Image 1 (cartoon, rainbow, N blue to C red):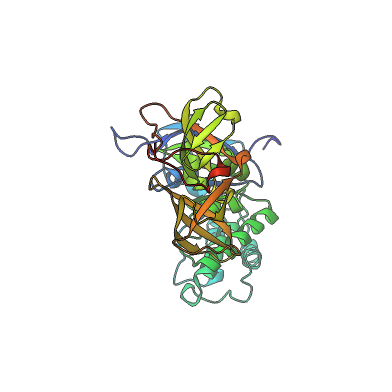
Image 2: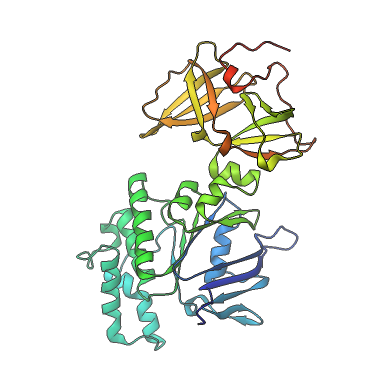
Length: 382
């Protein structure tokens, strides 16, 4: 493989399930370099699992080309079956053989390589034990799947995929069946393992936090297309569309109208924004952690709900227009449900999304817009 060639390259991959229906995957193109971890993130039905199956070879695309390690495996009249693609796959339900021990499960794929004369028989046991040690299951070689916890079963599935040392590992929602604590610990361990051995990986998830935490790059999918592919940081702070902003950041969106020197909103005024030049109406994206709350008996925002999340609280604030604002604060700030507050936002983190006349939501006419510094004062009806 040329030094500059990516581990995986997909060009305009398209897949439909039935005629006359929208593509499940629509002209998707991306590349993955050696050692990179890519998260396919999106809501149910967006095409992320189908795309993973196309890369693995479990599905055939109607159009497009796929290259693995610089070699065409699909396209130009060629088709390489899954078992010959040198791709490891970790399924959501682990797919372990219940009648085989841990060692036998891990060695299963290696035996297939041996039968095809791609691996000497004496290497099977060595590689299987190395993979088991890599995932931290040394000493459990003789156990059967029913004798293992969910996290341990997932480690066996990962070891089986890693044993042949493929250049690419595909993981389909690998942590979704695990409880929270195991999931948090295992996802970091999986990232560390793949990084240590230098294997590239693609994992499917609908969990925004999971994708941002362990991926080097995130591909956000919607209606069969990749609509933004970038680093987790840029995806979070600079979403390319309102859909991405809402799905990934779970931010608040507040209607805004340009008034002489700033954007007037129901929660106050925000100065000129770089990406809003020339617009007259739109929405301001405000992340939950970028809102500061101050108790104020004359405040126009009401604490409607509070959830304790361990290191932080998530508050629901009811605005006069009945819109609900979500706010995250440190656990040291405790406000009571029913308490009135005023808020302050960090304008440098605000992002503007324009709206046309058909989709724009008018500002509530019963609320007089005031600067943020005046939010503690009572607003008069107009």
